[in-house]
Length: 273
Ligand SMILES: NC(=O)C1=CN([C@@H]2O[C@H](COP(=O)(O)OP(=O)(O)OC[C@H]3O[C@@H](n4cnc5c(N)ncnc54)[C@H](O)[C@@H]3O)[C@@H](O)[C@H]2O)C=CC1
Ligand SMILES: O=C(O)[C@@H]1CCC=N1
Image 1: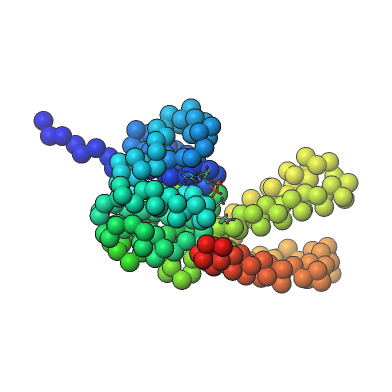
Image 2: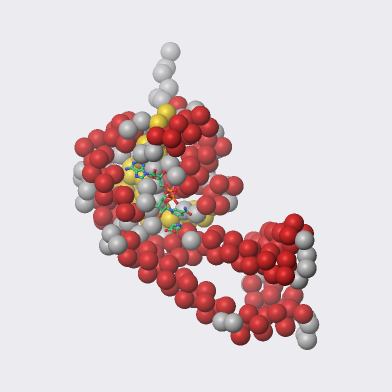
């Protein structure tokens, strides 16, 4: 009887917020848990993941040696140490997918054997509900098949866009950090509702549904946000009064400054700062 080849094995090294987001997404997408491995430094966290997903948590070197695809999801500052730990177990033909902000494919390629393919990814946390946005860029020894493999990995938890690596710091500032800006706006609107005298639960319901409805309109109508904003803004009405305050408080300029700061921080992380 013909033997079917076992499914490829994927390892996730670093299973904090983003690593678990990827792990849970792969499990939801139907990936067999016995084809997944995790490397995680904190013993308590490792136990938690073993109990929650039934996944094997092993040493980083073992995870990297046994896997075909290795996702690196540690902090940028820990990347050098992890690569030093796993380099001896890596071989040509394997794929390394880094999800770390700032870290370039060049940084990784210098520290692993030649012929190991590297893809840099900037994901975001909405991947937890399969609505992630990931920008992916090929390293210098990366084939179309490698890039497609990384695309499939991230595609199991949301949308994927192929981008030149020089755009990665900007992508980090927009979609990588972006969910935090949105949650910050949501928090601010909920607090404002409480100031206006609404019960907190009412204010929370109103803000969240307004956010979801607005996001759906953006995606489903394809109408430009300026047009959608104008449709809400009746001449001499309430929205115009509110928007004048936002302009006077420099909110638009604040968003530009914030995203420039995030982009610059991503560049600094690349220098190990
Ligand atoms: N949280 C987010 O929204 C996003 C995070 N990222 C990137 O994902 C990476 C991880 O970020 P988070 O998950 O937020 O951080 P985190 O601190 O929640 O997770 C990092 C995990 O790596 C583990 N770790 C540290 N050193 C290790 C080692 N030597 N071996 C094995 N495990 C080790 C830690 O114990 C921790 O569980 C970062 O590089 C970050 O830039 C990218 C996009 C979005
Ligand atoms: O704050 C950070 O550095 C990471 C990268 C993008 C989102 N979180």
